[in-house]
Structures are given as C-alpha cells and as structure tokens.
Image (cartoon, helix red, strand yellow):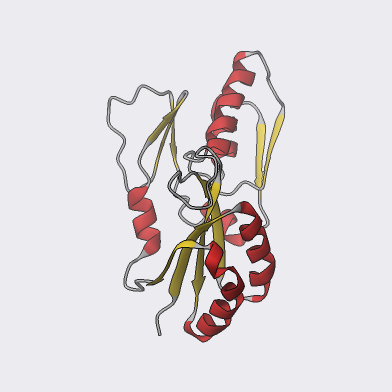
Length: 196
C-alpha cells in the first residue's frame, strides 16, 4: 500500500504534545510555523500557529490515527493524502531549487547553467537535495552574509571549520572569501559527506 501524508494546523502546545505522542512511530513528522488569521484557534490574528505533516507507511495507519485521536478536535484542515510514489522527489527538489544571489555569491544546482552575465564573483554549485544547505534558508544566507562582513572588516583566519556542514556551502564560501585559509568541512551524516 501507499504511504499517507497526514497534514493539519494547530497550536504550539498541541504540536509539542504530538512530538511526544508520535515519538514511537517509524514515520516522519515535520512541523513549521505559520500564521493563519482565519483559524479558529487564533484569538489574535498575528499569533503564530503551526502546521504539521506526518508521513506514515500503511502498517502504521491505524496506530498513528489512534495517537492523533485525542487531538483531533484541535487539528484544523486535517487531511490524509496518499504519497505519490511515482514522483522522483529528489529530482523535483533539484528542479525547484532556483539560482540564488546572496551578496557576492551566485548559488546554483548542477541542473542549472549560470548565465554569462552573472555579476557575483563567486559561483557555488550546490546539489543539496539530500543534505541541508542550499542558501535558501535564512540561517544559511545569514551565515554567508556574516562571513562577507567579517572578511570586509579585515578578518583573515588561518583555519575555518564548518562543523555540521550539510552540503558544504559555508566551507566552500569560506574558501572563496579566504583562499589562503585551511578550510575543513565535517558532518556525522554520511549523505552530507557524499554530497559535500
């Protein structure tokens, strides 16, 4: 049978309780913050609500539904959607990764050919579909811009360590900014090491 994605919106308190309740399942549970002023839990239209998504295999459908049952009246927009197993999700992720211009960096995937008119001095080819670090997330883009500010302020490190490197984007950027530095990228995820 096909895996299911169970999705919903709720409060932070319910998400926290669900994390504990769903700790025993084999599926994948992800959450994200968002605002939804039309949500019935939203007394203040600016308050933050949470979206939840659980992907489960068929042998766990009933178990996960039972774990969710005590919370069902607090889950809005609840839906169960079969996962389309014919889609190559890694390829879709790559295709959805647009080139980014962050400070002096032009960041692109190998599926994209940079135009000849790129004005950024540093072009980084990142295929991060299976490892964190495309530059799209604010933490990564913020680190890239902070490194540029450090360089512009005169910092000249002899060594740089990108610990938990994911795709290796920060290590590559550090080598661009400080070509004389010894740069190390390290991660405990074998997939991150393969991608880097």
